[in-house]
Image (cartoon, rainbow, N blue to C red):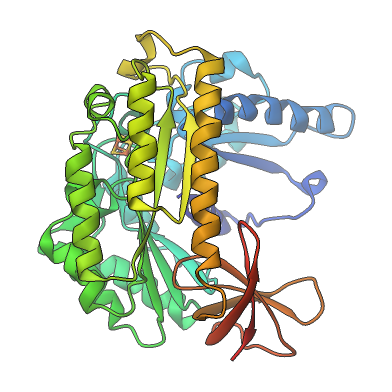
Length: 422
Ligand code: SF4
């Protein structure tokens, strides 16, 4: 979502004649669009600000420095104290105001902080700016925010409550991207499966988007298990443009930990949902997110996570040690020791990596459909992704970027498949 937001910021700033430069030495304005989901990402922001500050210490007049995104939102009261290099702080729901804020700052040179959470005003503004970042596979944010309040998560505090854009503005944006070369759209939201605007839920929106000629593929991420109804499950069966791969975070396989996290679903509910998807589309594959070492997690709880992973057979996943986020309810709970959490993470990741390799191995000598995204720097090699989002490298003299082609897979590494055109 930050990639989408960054591109939209660039769209907005064209209106005040600012354009991107590749060489940071040439920049008059720096914008860091930041992530607050884990402690490490937040720490990195301040060390990266320090690096930029160093570049300009001896060189020329100071550029204007803008801190945007979720770190800006969460740390708004202390950013100026922590770094005097920052001139403007703007939260993820207020970045549409940047053209006016920058002009104001240029006039009076005073520091400005805007962390309003008015997401509907943001999209009203963005809808009147063309999305200029059409790629073969493009992101489109359709929903933002979260009302679920998992106890470890900062999103409800940094992005605010759930908000869904209107279907007609989304469809217009997708059509425009397709006109400029997009062939796959990834619909984004912190709770994308909770999308609801007037009569449109996510299933209806997908059906409508699928009618756009030349759009080949649709995906959506990220979902909460509780937001799927029969209609949304069955869309995997009825809509061929919707790819058979779903990222469905579960976080833990233990009911005790799920309850402590306030996830509002059980292990049994999650597994039942997985089997419903498989009944709707037998070739569907799943990825997930896992937190290990959440406060209160015992060896037995952790082993339940391992058993859930083995039962579902995820083809790809993200796993992390629990990261304390200031302002969330879990921050004050007794923490699991770092070495114990690290050991569990390593064990989980080994199981997940083995499953990823198993999924890759199952593609050998199989036909897979690859959407060609670009040529690589290696001679006669093209890059694309198959139906399951797996990166595929193809040796060929010529491929048309944006075409979907049949590829036979002959080898693999953990993160990549390699094949030839059929
Ligand atoms: S549902 Fe997702 S975004 Fe919402 S609080 Fe839970 S983890 Fe965070």
